[in-house]
Picture 1: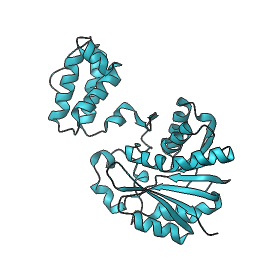
Picture 2: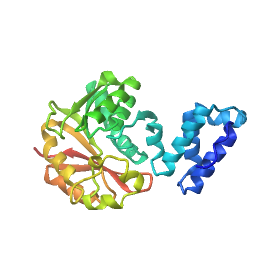
Picture 3: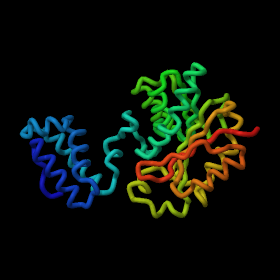
Picture 4: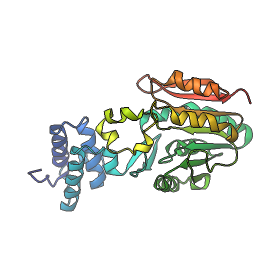
Length: 292
């Protein structure tokens, strides 16, 4: 970048937006605002009310570096180090999938059951397989004070990130992190099992957006040859850990509804709900066990 950034807030914001737009970034106004506000510690209100506010040289240097990373293709929330999910601010790490709005569909899908179970039983025990940042489990815990959750992940770094998020949200007392390859180290029984497992067929990963392929961990994306290997493992293993009349909620790829329903049906489960994401695509399936 040839020219240095302006040292006052409104011109700085405008120049950041211009640079991102010139580089073809999809939403330059939003990304520029997020970057400038984060590194300068300012708000949108301050940019309007005090456009001439001075910004220190070390701050503009940090913003310059962040803009360069964004122009090079790094997702804006990776640069910031956090992402909002279901009203919660969650820290990210290289070993965690970046939680996305479509996954909030899973929270909404299973939340009424979690609330009803907690009201009836006095608690609701949740198992979150492949917890990553802890997004799904922590969103449910934040909404249901009587619930508890165990977040399972194969990555120790992901589990450390999930525990950090639980602590920062005041939920650490109800969240347990467990290093396990799916059910391998799991014990006890749960009222609810939730998962946003890898569901991209291995050969399709190369076709994903650069921001996904280059920055989300491959093990959180790669669902095997047909994208369904994780669902087979969950369907095959869940019965030993699910309470009678408990439920399983899984996020899916939008073309996988029928195949995943058949996998769970063959394992003794019936579908009790199909939920669509913000784009109108099938995104979450909810199952209950109907035969031993």
